[in-house]
Image (cartoon, rainbow, N blue to C red):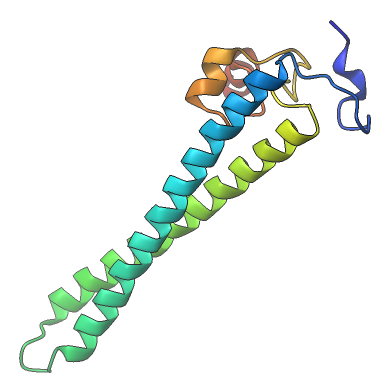
Length: 137
């Protein structure tokens, strides 16, 4: 196998250890995860809209300060979850770019192939398990 020393510098240089069929499998897997994340974001935005509408309908007599705090905390949690999903979509988009430029499945730390099992579990990963364990030390 060719050394990935030129990773990221080669224009159409294929350094992925995967065949075009395997890359298509991962592309479909990533697209499904991306679609699910987009649906999660839409669901959470609908919850935020419902919460805002509910807050507008509450009168001073039917609303307690503790309820206001709880509602604010729930809204904040939704905003954080939406942000997290948007970040995840960014990771998935970068993985799709690596599939396109045939660099998918190469560890950016070690330069060695990432196992298919790891990529099936975490298809947007850029590092192998060995590199991940090394980071944790």
